[in-house]
Image (cartoon, rainbow, N blue to C red; front, side):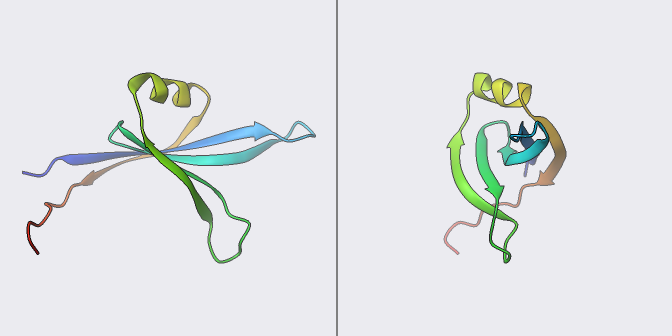
Amino acid sequence: MAEDLDVDVIGQVRSDNRGRPRRRRTLIVLDSRYVVVLQASERKDCDFEFVTAFPASVACLANIRRGSSVVQKRRHKRKPQSCGD
């Protein structure tokens, strides 16, 4: 029986030298356990570049959500993993 996978896309912004908000990083939180960090790419052939990924505690996620805004929330059906294919 497959469970659902929760995916939250979180956007972080900061002010530039003129005080205008600029997009800083995009965080993808998987099942409230794992965080993937992406940043806007300067290359024209891709939108984002991978920065890092790490397992996250409840306190870490609370800190991330406090200073960020949730851009999108999704629920995906997990596909069963194949054994030996």
